[in-house]
Image (spheres, each protein chain N blue to C red):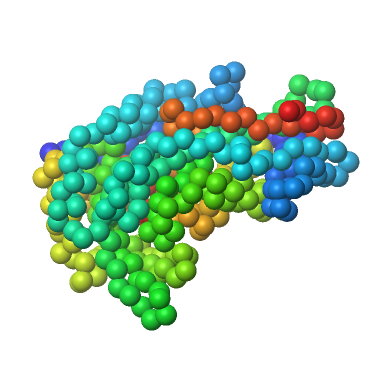
Amino acid sequence: MKTPAHLYQSWAALLLGLLCVCSGLNCAKGSSGPNAVDGVIYPEHFRFRVTVPDNDQQAPSGGWRAVCIHAQVKHGNSDAKTLCKFEVGIPLRTKADGEIPLEEAQFAAAAMANRAARDVLSRAHPGDMYSVLCRDFINTYNAMLDAKYRGALVSACVTKGIETVPFGYKVGEEPVP
Amino acid sequence: MMDLTEAGLVQLARRFYPTDYPVTKDEYDSEGLLPFQRTPEHARYLEAWDKAMVWPEWKTLIQEMHSKFDAIADSTQPWVTACRKCCVYVDRPLPNGALHVTRVAAAVSVLAPLYVTYCTTSIIVDRQEFDTCLLFDFPDEVKPHAATLSALVERILGYQALPLQFAQVQVLRARVPHVRTDREPTLLDAFFDSMLESLF
């Protein structure tokens, strides 16, 4: 399925909205082309849940936490919407970093999401399928996060029992709270 | 013991990954699932992980690794790959505070009684890790570690090694979610991971 032009704009707006995170987390608004864009993903969106406890203090590394983000964009007052669901997993402790505090993991997850979005957007074309753009975003984000924290992983949402966090906003009218 | 043939392994992998569900056909349904996530193959995959997360023998393996090696860890990334991973750390200090780290690892499939051993080498400087290499041929200094780790996996879990000549056999058109590009998945991907070097 090809992405209709207005959905492409919405997707692009989502990615640009994420850019706000990178510019210091104070930015709450962004815009792309003719569309007004509101929305930002904050570290607080990354409500990680521990799925493997770090209870082996003899080990140099261990533990796992994950969260599933549902990023949805609505276009104006129409029913059209795009969706990209992704799971972010980050170890609790790594050989290189030692313990990774929750707040640090959340900030890095948000900042990297922003950078990945910018990277994907720079390669996107109006005819691209949004499912492919979503996968490209996940892949780019994964590479960046793994470079920051060895072992960190971004994927489709699959893990049971973790929190699902909706991240949504509208393009062209008031943002969704 | 499993009868390891190329055709048999491909057939087994297909029990957990549906065929002909490409990313280009992805569209969330009313319940928010992608088409491949509604298949019996994916249900089997999730069921396998449910069992792997409450696996008493895995805990035994980690405990026995502690008794055999100075530094070991469980490096499992649950549900998002097809294996549990553990590794032995062998450090060598370098000038200027850098550290050369060799991880001798076992990836243990949650889908079949199969494992692979391998190692990674990397450099850590100021909390940054780089120059990571993945090797299936062990450097001489860690060959004993690899042999001991293999023996533990086989004795405690009852698993057998995937012969490496099968590793790159393709499972054509199977949807293996942790293979992130458009290439065809291999048996190594399907039973284990596409990023085995991703050890923490």
